[in-house]
Every structure is written in C-alpha cells, then in structure tokens.
Length: 473
Image (tube, rainbow, N blue to C red; front, side, top):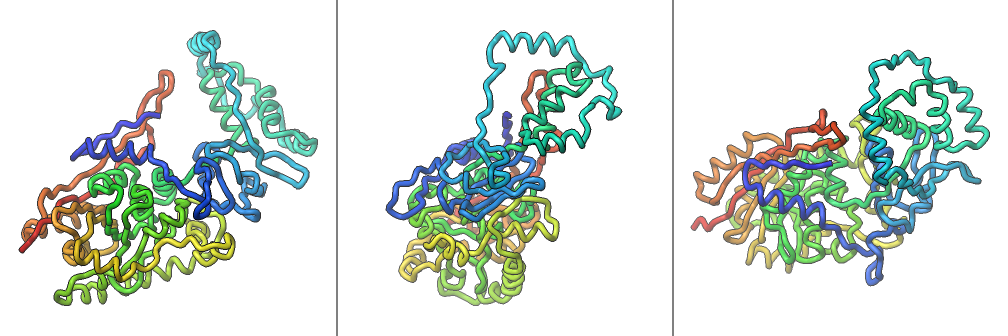
C-alpha cells in the first residue's frame, strides 16, 4: 500500500504530523513501578484483533474469561497473553474444543527463479475461457463435513478444495491467489494481534462506524495535533465529543508529561470510553483530567451560565444513550445495527476495577491548584471536536482561557459552522492567522500491473479551522 496525501493548506504540517502519528508508539506499563515490555501483551491489556485482513475488527480486553466468536466457533483469548503484538493466529481443534494457536506464514516463492516463472505464467494465461457455472468444484458440502469430523484442519480443507477444482490450474496466478484467500477466510480464518494506538483506533472506527467519532479521519486527526502544537510538557485544553479519541491521541502525544484537560459546558461530562483502549499507564492516566467550563472560566458576564442551560439537556441525553448500552468484554467495530451498537461501548470503569484488582481511571476531576494555575497562566493550546454544539457560542467562552499567542484548532464535519466562527473571530479581533483547511487522503493499491486508487475510498475528511489567539485589550 502507498499513501498519496494532499492537503489544501499547510501540507508540510500534515505530513510531519501523519508520520509522527504512524511512528510514535505509546510506552506503557502494566503496573506502576514495574518493567513491562510494551511490545508484548499482558493480562488485562486491550488489543485490536484483525480477523481475515480487515474483514472484521474487534477490540478486546485480554483476561482468563474473555472469548472471541469466529463463525460458529468460540475461542478463548487466553493464548494471546504474553505474545508479541503483530503475531498471527489461526483456529485449531484442541482437546478442549476450538482454540487459537500461533501461526507462522511460509516464505516460499521469494527467490528470483520463481519470480521469473511467475511473470512468464502470468503472460501466458487469462480467464476468458472460464465459465462460472458452479460445476468446477467436485468436493461437496458433505465431503467437507466428513473431513471436519475426521479432524482435518482448515488449511487441509483449503488444499483439498484447490485439488478438486477443475478450473484452478487454468486461472491466472492473481486469480489463484484470490481463490485461495477466499477459501482461507471461510475455512481457516486468521487473527492478527494488533496494538491499539491512535492511528489504528481511528482507522478501525472510521472504517465501520464513523458516526461514533464524528467522521474524524486519521490524517485529519494528525493535522489537528500538528496545528495545535501538541508537544511534551504542554497543558492542552480539549473539548471532545468524539468518544474520547481526541483526548487519547493528545495524551499519547504528550507521553506522560504536561496535562490534557477535558472540559465541557454544563454539569455532565462527555463520554470518553475510547481512552481506555489505549492501555495508558497510571502515570499517563493521572495527566488526563476533567473540569467543567464554569470552573475554568474567568469572572465575567453570564455567558457561561447561558451555555450551561443551553447544553445541559444535550449532555444528559448523550450520556443516557451511552449508559443504556450493555457492559461487554469484547468491543466489535461493526455496522451500526441496534444490537451491535451496544457492543461498541467498552466496559465501564467499575467493571475494570473489579476485574483487574486496581484502578486505572483516566479523567478524574482537576485539582483546584491546577485550575488556579491555568486561570493565571492559560493553556498552551486548544482542540475542539464538538459536532453537536454551536461552535461560536462555545469558542467565545473558551478562547479567553488560552495564553496569548496560543494556537487553537477546531474540527467539524461541515464547513458552514467553521466559516461563521471564522467571520466572528475576525470581527471581534480575537485571533490572527485564521484559515480553514480541508484534508484529502488517497490510498492506492500497488500490485503488478494493477496499481490504482482504491475503488471504495472515502474522499471526505471534514474541515479544520485554525488560528492563534491574541490579546484583545
């Protein structure tokens, strides 16, 4: 795969931030004071399970009782504990039923002679004479069931299907590989153990359930972090209505230094369940705090009270919708059907305390000492991803909390709210260097004689309003 990234404004910032998002990996420990290898799973950590190369994506928390259902088989996730991230697993029939076992792909066909033979066969074959009439396969469903009863593995069934196909040898090598992968996904599914961090979490949600994260794409997320100048020892103010993805990405970039303060109008904080998927250590979780906007605001007119009354009902409705979802140990990214929407909500913090025996809760209330310090010195940057509220009404109360010359960035799915906000900022002379950016990302398939953009790619990545706060006195 190759990515061709074009940004309408400031392409260097976007490229730098995207590379940092791709390369940067969080260094977390399983217990405070212990030395934990961040490249190996441990009991109680969150993982992203990639089934059949992206066909199904599941977030799971590894424990002795956690299970994963693939097809009609339910497997325990206990064998995944202690394995390095990036390991590949397949389903096998064990003494106690189906289980996940480590799978090491073969490296056959990598020498130059076979590569030249591949090219010569590819030129001499085509699929024009093939007729898809369901008569090419001589192996019936009863035969496959009999092989399963005899203990045949999934790979053996795939080999038998290939051997009993009358048209397999006449296909091009590219078609043969597609046929093999199709049968392998059905009879011998593979599970890739991936480490959850900002990029893969954002890609997983954007692929199957983009509404949950406000249609925030990974290149847009990287551009937000870059334009806000999120770096070590920064005090970042965040308004996060995208499930906690923005808060987690900022905390991952800070790496246990500085603070990320998640603020909200009204009395009810926005849910930030996605933060717990990042496997943050105790030290990083202490750096993620919450505080209502009314406590952070400087003494002024009753604008904050008006926002409190206007947004209170919305916050209560948003929280009640999340609390109605059932508590689960495996969170699957899937289509937003009624049954599956509840599986998108990770387990609550209380259940985590009971299972792991220790509290690792992010988003505690900010101390009064920290609030007083922020009131005196201001925050170093501001990030807003609040697609459900009026941006200008929110920004005119939050912008005074920043220090002078501090950058701010606002993400929205639509252009008009940001254009209105930009116009008002210019009239009030509250900020300079105002600009609206539209990220654009194109993903390519790169194969021999088949290099082209993906046919079903999403060209929309929302809009970003950025600027620098100035002293209005």
